[in-house]
Image (cartoon, rainbow, N blue to C red; front, side, top):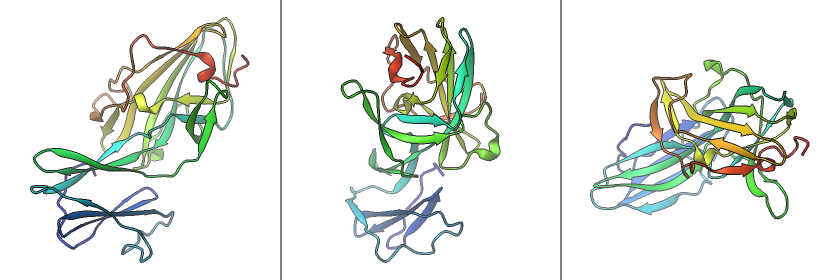
Length: 250
């Protein structure tokens, strides 16, 4: 999936990644790309007649193309199917599956990014108040305590949240803002994993400490790093708790 491949002239190349259908065509010194989404089990045999091709002029020497998985360009509002309750002093390690985006690159003397395409279209939502909120994507998830391999699909990355309640209060999690733009991606035998997001809640008046180290998750110690985060985490960064736990009772 993530290895470079050549594009023959005037012969469309098709790739299916989850519900995303991708067609790539090299024609008259240009790269043409078309995509759509279907839930059908059987992939389409040819590009849709009413689809729209987007075109990029290629450089002399551009000889191949590659896909690179990346996480969405905005934070994900994760809503567990049932609330998670953390007693004071407790911690929980949860797993959620986030649809990836596909970065298409052209390879010549240098590698140049062309376009990013989501494998699944997510709805937008607003997280926070009018003056201190942010635009996120919305994702309903089971926030599992384990992640069996049979549940991981090719267009998903497993994101890990290690949540620690260091406050003197119980913590009720209804929604969690997962900042996927800070996460690295790893390939574990064809399955994608992200590094840990360690969240330490220190109470209503305190800060919520968030840490992303960019190291291989302990669940998949032999995984190979595929991609760096969009916006690396700044060490020492603290965020107000309501940015993460809007409905936790503060």
